Length: 229
Image (tube, rainbow, N blue to C red; front, side):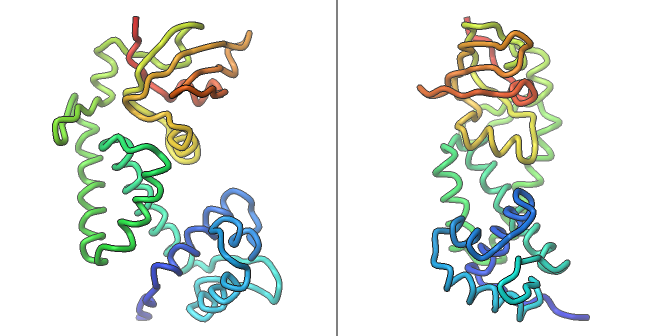
C-alpha cells in the first residue's frame, strides 16, 4: 500500500486554491494561482514542481494545472476542513466573514495534525447533533435550528415585503451559495432590511450592516429571519 506523502501547510494552501479555481473557472494556470494567493508566479511554479513530484498535480510545460485523483482527494479534505472551521467561527462564534477566513487558515497552520483532526471530528459531530435539537447553547450564545424556525416568528427573507426588517437566524443553503452569503456578511444575528423587490420577486434589494446587496430569489429563500416589527 502506498503511503500518503507528507504535505506542508504551504502546499496544502496551493492544493485548496487549485481545487477552488478548478471548480469556478474550469482551467487553472500559474497566473491564476499567483493572483489568488497574492504571491509571485516564480514561487507558484516552484510549488507546482513539488506537487507534481508528489503526484498530486499534472502539468505539461507552460500548460494548465490539473489535480490527479490523489491530489483532488487531498484538496477536498483540506477544503472540507477549512469550511468546517469557517462555519464554526461564523455561525457559532459570530465572527465576521473576513476575520473567519483568516483565522480558519491560522488555526489549520498552528495546531498539530492530531489536534486539528480531533477538532474537525468534534465540530462535525456537534453540527450533526444540533440538527435534531430545538435550541442549543455554546458559551451562552443561543443556536436556533430548523425545528425552532418552524415554531417561532420566522420566515424566509424572500417572503418579506418591501420595508420589512428581520434578524438572520439560519442559512439553509450549502456550497457556493452559502459561501457567497457568508462572505457578504449575511450571518446569524445580523439584521437585514428589504429595500426593494423586482416585479417578479427576483432579485431582492436588501441592506446589511449599512451596505446594499442584490440577492437572487433562490438565495433569499435560503435565509431564515426573525421578522422584526
